[in-house]
Each structure stands twice: as C-alpha cells, then as structure tokens.
Amino acid sequence: MLWARNHTQSHTVARSALGCASQYYWEVRRMKIAIIGGGLAGLTAAAYLSDNFGTEGTVFERSPQLGGRAFTYQKSGFTLNYGAHAVYGIDRHTLQHMEQELKLQFQSKQVDKRKVVYAKHGHLTPAPLDFVNILKTNVLKPFEKIRFVAEIAAVVANIHQLKNYKTLGEYLDHSHASADVKELWEHLVSSNFFIAPKDARKVSGEVIAEYYHNLFLSHKPVNYILGSWATITDQLIEKINHNEHWDIALKEGVESITQENGKYLLNTKTRQGLVFDQVIFAMPSQQVIKLLEGSSWLPFFEPYRNNTSTEVMVYDVGFSKVVSRPFHYISDMDNKIFISDVSATDHTVAPPTGQLLQGIAYLNDDCMDDEQRKEYLEGKTQKMEALFDQYYPDWREFVEVKRVSKKAMVSSVKNIHENRLVPSQIAEVPFLFCGDGCEGKGELAERAFSSGRNVAGLLLKELADIKSVAY
Image (tube, rainbow, N blue to C red):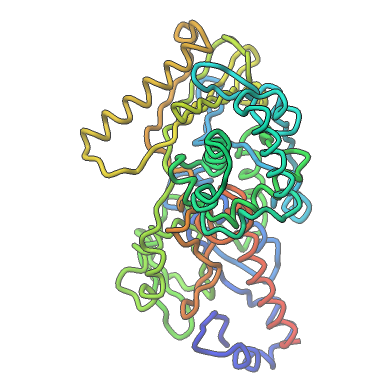
C-alpha cells in the first residue's frame, strides 16, 4: 500500500490500493513524514502535521538549535536575534491564522510611528509612513506630498499602475515623478524587503503593489513580537513534542535521499536508510540543490540554481543604561543604514534599566576579492558606529554586549525578477517545498510561515482524501 507522492503514479491507483483498509489499519498506520530543516517554515509545517493523529515524522536540523535565521539567544541579560523580529501588518499576517489554528499565545507591540525618522543630508525628519507623517516630513516638497498621497491611495484601491510593470525600476523610469519621490519608493522597498536600493529597482511591480496594498490597509503596520522569535518557535516546538509519534533530530543533517518502492530513504551522518512516505524540504534552494546533486530530480530544480540571497550587516549593542531615546527607529537614507531601538518597543529584550539597539546596513553583492570585501565591511562598520556616535552620545562607555554579524543572511532568496521563488510543488519532483525562498504570502518571515502552513495543508488534504476512500 503506497503512501508516497509519486507523480508517475496516479492518486486513483493509490486510493484503490487503500480501498480495503479497515478502521483498525488507519489507527495504527500513519503517514510518515520527513521535514528537512528546523527553521520557521519547517517548524510551522511540523506543528500543523503533528496536530493530526494520522501522521508521524521527524524534523531534521543540522544545527545545534532550532529556528534557523530566527534563532534567539541570551547574553548578559539581553536577548539577541539574528535580524529583526518585527512583523509587518500583523493584523493581516499569517501569524494571525496560526494563532487561532495552532492556539499560539503571544503579545506584540506596535512601533510608535511618530518616533520613526529618516536622516537625509544630516537632517532628521518624520518618516512618511502615514498621511500624518507625510504632511510633516521634509523628505518631500509640498507638491510631491500630494503626488505621493495619490500613489498610496491608488495602491490601497488596488488600481496603481505599478502592478503592470515588470519591476519597480521600469515603473520609475516611465514615471514623471520627481527624483525625491523615486528615491523614497526605492528606500521604502529596501526597508521592507531588506535589500539594497539598487536591488529594490529589480523587485516585481506586482509584488510591491500587492505587498503595500496589504500593508497600507493594516491597522498595525510594524509590530514586534514580545519575547522575540523564541516566543513563537518555542510554542511550535512544544506542539511537535506533544505528539509522541514526532521527534526532532538536532545536529543531524540529511546527507542523501533516494527513492525505492515508492518510499524515500534518507541517510544522515549517524543513521542510514531511514524510511519515509513523504518528504518536505524546508531549507534554502541553494542547500536543496546540494542535497539533490547526482539525482534524477536535480534537472527539474535547475531554474532555481542561480537564486541569490539577501545579506546584511547586523550590529547589536546592549547598554547597561538607557543612553538616549530620541527615536525608536532612524533610517539613514544617505548611507543606507538604519538603527532600531528594539528595547523601546520590546521591553523583554533588555534588562529593566538597559537598552538594546540593532543596526542593519544593506550590503551590495558586487564581485569583490577577500581584501576588498574586508575593506568594504569595515567601512560599513565605521559608518554604523558614526551613526551611534551622533544620536547616542557616550554609548561606548555603557556597552555590556556587542555583536557584529558582518554577513548575516536575512532571506535565502531575494524577491527580485532575476530570481525565482520555489513553488510548493514542482512537476516531476515528488517532494514539497517551503521556506522564505518559496512561494507564499508576504515577505521574509511571513513567507516562511505561509509556505510551511501551505505544504502541511496539502499533505493533510491528501491524507483526508485517501482516508475517505479507505473508509
């Protein structure tokens, strides 16, 4: 009796083979699922699947910890994240569905829009995040504000011409907007998609229009999950562990996968010939390609071979006291750097009297040798510290924790037109795929959540369909 998703065999045959199964069979025979990758997407898929008595499985994670790039750890009373744990449009976010369906419990707090500023040519001005701030900002001249308000209204109404252009760059090239309005579009897309401004011009116009249509309709545009990503990942892990038929294998990456008699055989460093009915890849496409090298499935994955990732420099610094709190977020438009006072929104990430800042600098992926790259990153570090010096005087005297991640991957696939997001299913490939480099709702973490939820739904639907035939 075959459970395997095999595109060379019809579901009709599988259902027919199961037609004589008894209720007792269904109580003892479960769909056995391997999930390769323990990041947000893999944990989400596993949490949904483990909530169903008809499944069993294993989450394989090669690292010593779960969460992937949403990994959180404690140091000297500070909670450090590899990247921001901000959620955009949380009231319209996949997390809201997960909260209800998986009974997650978490709190979030909205960033104070009135304390978000842009720095341009040495001057600070309110960030044009809503109509109130647009009226106050100096980023745009009065007549430009009218133009930009009209553009926002068109996005909200889903009639903006941007969605008809291949890229933001093509739209801006055909637009009669001023240089300041065009720069603002680039900067907004850079901030929300976590990419350099030159890459912002390569993002699909349709993707941007859909993203901002959703964000501008949100009543909670930028929120932080109180307690960081661990608040979510810990609950997903607990839910998986609650099912005795599911387990999590840490420090056990999958090294090879083969198919035999409709089953999938996985080998790790410590175990050989692990048999599964279904396999979900919850890992970057670059890693999937390495794992599938030499297999008959690799040619079908070729369109995703040249996908590029998004890398930034992350500079976390924790102070023993609140050094200064003039703003909650400062975005330097000249140097493409921004600083978040994370502890101003999420009080849980710092000791009661402390302060935690996170600086992020966009990185260009231009070809450089090692020496050029080192010099380039050192220059970014100096600019970041100069920004700290300017707005947080004497900060060096109160440093308790400092961490600089000079090449942090915040997205496994840049959502630009040269790259192709991996679909949940690929023709002629029997596996399922999820992660921030896959097709799904939103950007960054939301795409990981939404794609993980989607692949779990596909398997649970298949399980229900086959089960209905068996009964």
